[in-house]
Amino acid sequence: MKYVLRKPLIPMTEYESSSDEVKREYDDQIQKHGRITNMKRTLLHDVQSFRTYMDWYTLYDELCPVFGNRALQIFSYAISTGNDCLICGLFFTKILVDNGEDPENLQLNETEQLLIDFGVAITKDPHNIPQEIYDKLREKYSDKILVQLIAFAGIMYATNLFNTVARVPLDEELYGYRSKNETLTGEEN
Image (cartoon, rainbow, N blue to C red):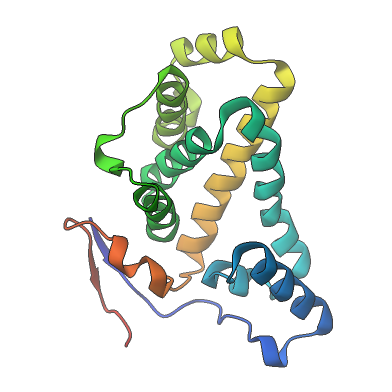
């Protein structure tokens, strides 16, 4: 895959020149995650938009007892790579690699395979998700869990879209996680 890096549509916010409300969000992100990503810095031009996207974490926490961290990371990876989102794809590649996984050769249990199949189907053609996937999901999960899972996928999809359309710069910590098949042109130094 060849990615062309372009000038960001929207500059990232800077902590020093931000409002107190934005600074609180920065501080909260750094406390929770140790850093703030380029996407979050871009979203912080509008705190409500930022908070909407941060509900991904709320749903993640709700779904973790049902699916587990690894399964949700793999689901997010499938959606992000299916959407060719460089930032999110590499973000989840980093998580998997840092946990000792090979994203190209994942050993999956039945639930993880179902989530991969669902994530790929969502990105391939959400109008024609195979009935077999729906049947397996219905067989295993309640209406509430299915709503949460689809909403989670929707926020993940929206995150991919935001990063791509806004031309959010790739976070430097992700550079080393590119595959040999991914090339970046037009990188800014």
